[in-house]
Length: 114
Image (tube, rainbow, N blue to C red; front, side):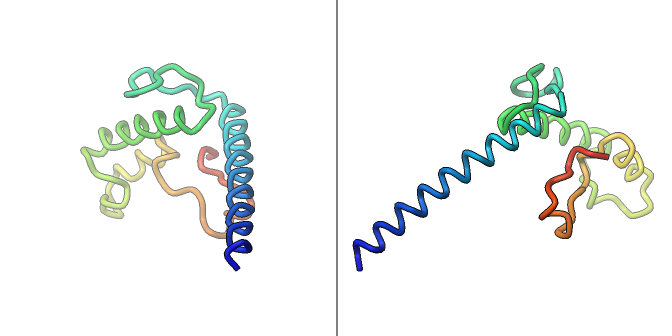
């Protein structure tokens, strides 16, 4: 019984490592295809091509900072439904609002597409 649990654990670990590697490669290629560069005022990796999770994280941080600056420190959900700043976020910061519903998850993430 212990041997079976050991073999099962090792197989699950190998599958997860392979799945993680494939995910890293697919996400990195998809990001690189967008040809986005990290903003010059980003806290890290400024000017780099967004082609992986680290540069994507840095770009997401600066997008969040710009969105908070535009709304006086309020997030989209914290704004009143009739607040004109909601429209500002819709026009200028497409990635600062949710773009993916559970129905589209099997079809892929569409977070950067307008």
